[in-house]
Image 1 (cartoon, rainbow, N blue to C red):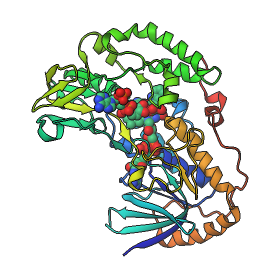
Image 2 (image 1 turned 135 degrees about the vertical axis):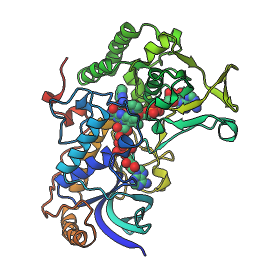
Image 3 (image 1 turned 45 degrees about the vertical axis):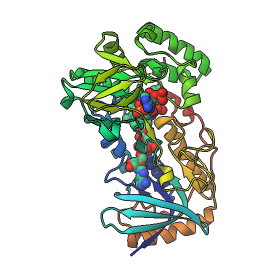
Image 4 (image 1 turned 135 degrees about the horizontal axis):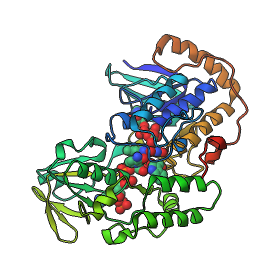
Length: 433
Ligand SMILES: Cc1cc2nc3c(=O)[nH]c(=O)nc-3n(C[C@H](O)[C@H](O)[C@H](O)COP(=O)(O)OP(=O)(O)OC[C@H]3O[C@@H](n4cnc5c(N)ncnc54)[C@H](O)[C@@H]3O)c2cc1C
Ligand SMILES: NC(=O)C1=CN([C@@H]2O[C@H](COP(=O)(O)OP(=O)(O)OC[C@H]3O[C@@H](n4cnc5c(N)ncnc54)[C@H](OP(=O)(O)O)[C@@H]3O)[C@@H](O)[C@H]2O)C=CC1
Ligand SMILES: O=C(O)C(=O)Cc1c[nH]c2ccccc12
């Protein structure tokens, strides 16, 4: 039997974006529920990332709204440190997602979002109706493995997506091909090499290789100087650090690293040691795969190579269109990404919002979440108050697991939307150089 649950705001996804949105709403006493398909929050970080992962950006660019990292936290927080931070964040702001809830469909009808959710524990369908809906399912909803002739049909080696890779233990002595030279590919290739796998990496297009310190300097300077100037400085520093990498197969894009991020959304690749392994010849750079055979790959230049395993670090795609029709709410395009350019990417029609789709990583989430909460707070406050008190009763009856905010007062004045990082992070918490 279908259960119907009424709530003012339904947030889909309990990654950093969903947690941040719920926290911001709770601070404004706006009733909300977070539904999450997995059995934990931040499952990308807990379940779908490799062991040696650390935040590439300094901690002040990775904190969620209203809770800076402690001053004794390392500048570059580890995966476990970040997970602990998220757990503390959820506790502090009373965010209690409803786990094992997979959203299957959402549509707008008679002024409400009707959201059908499979409860994986009971196998029942739950129907939520919400005045506002926040998509927080992430830009990394699902891993992408390209279609390569022979791969599914006849390749006898192992192949996996980078989100399934944990560490190099079982690859020692094996021939491993890593496809992709983004942050995942370059780090996994290095990890494999350190475990004495025989590693090759497919680099099919230009890439900006930087260090985390160069990016940190660049990000700090971007507050004061134009992108082009910051890019020139970063390129100079990168040249000093790496020399000319094009002779190793790592050609730089025409635009500088931050301009490229703005135009294409692709972040520069932070080197964690892979470039050294490439220069020393331990890791080989190879072109794209043309097709695979039983235990071999053929590259587009006609060369072939025996491989035991292939790690596809070929990126992700949004999974929004699996449960939301493109035209509903006028917010997403057919790729499940924002229709409108940053900074107008987070608000759609009929009470639909998104958090975490601005291609700005965690810093983007820290801008989107307060904007969404303030916008909702500014809409029809009187009606919201009535709903709030009705919902707190419903929640007592039905939703012992859900996030509840039972206070009746709501903040009604909405400050202007946050557009810049410095609106989120007080200057004294930013590093100076
Ligand atoms: C390996 C890796 C490292 C990264 N490192 C950094 C970094 O150092 N700094 C930085 O700024 N950014 C980084 N990023 C970018 C990254 O996108 C963010 O860090 C962050 O996790 C995004 O948060 P999110 O909540 O938007 O999405 P996610 O973390 O992906 O969370 C989305 C949640 O929605 C849930 N969900 C999806 N579909 C459904 C559904 N149908 N029903 C219910 N729930 C659903 C998922 O299970 C998931 O828990 C990294 C990304 C990756 C892949
Ligand atoms: N510690 C951290 O902060 C980390 C952050 N991340 C972030 O997570 C997100 C995802 O990163 P990542 O997983 O690296 O994915 P990306 O999308 O950033 O990179 C994918 C890579 O795969 C290549 N590729 C895609 N398809 C093919 C193909 N068919 N043949 C050859 N190459 C192909 C792309 O090349 P092309 O350019 O030609 O498309 C690109 O080099 C990014 O935002 C990244 O910054 C990831 C890991 C660590
Ligand atoms: O994960 C992303 O793509 C981000 O936006 C954050 C990020 C991770 N590594 C980076 C390197 C340079 C600029 C942003 C990032």
